[in-house]
Length: 169
View 1 (cartoon, helix red, strand yellow):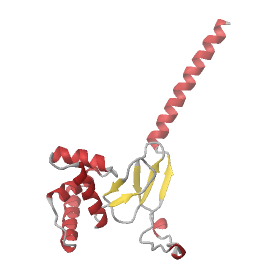
View 2 (view 1 turned 90 degrees about the vertical axis):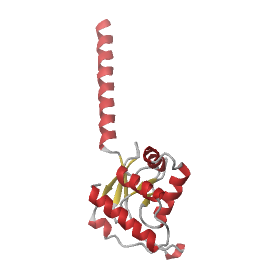
View 3 (view 1 turned 90 degrees about the horizontal axis):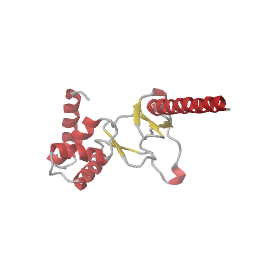
View 4 (view 1 turned 180 degrees about the horizontal axis):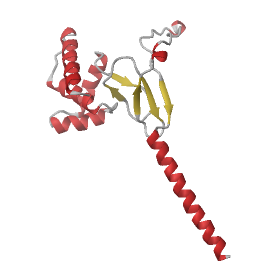
């Protein structure tokens, strides 16, 4: 995130806190800055690692509570997926996610067609839809290339052994 966009997000967050009558504390600012700087759908632990490098006195519990507060206020969002840990997203506007089922990487993408999907009628469940975000699951390029590289290595190793066995016969 460029410095000007980051400053705008921080000022917007300060305004939201003021309107909600919630103090914009040093801890909230530092945690928000970490989420904005990581800009990669970080876990709470990843945010905490960066926060303690900048302000050693901020505890893990404070980071977790602050992330939850920022989510409740709409400053950041939680990314819901089946990975090992909850991820946090600095982008609160409408967008969608590509989720790698191998490494849990989450990538933002934008698609107007998906944005135009009508909300389903879920009234029979007593559910009130506030947002629709699409999650597309698959295997990312890095994982695919790693798998292809390993497969290529196995083929070469197997071909080498087979050739050696044939020559010995």
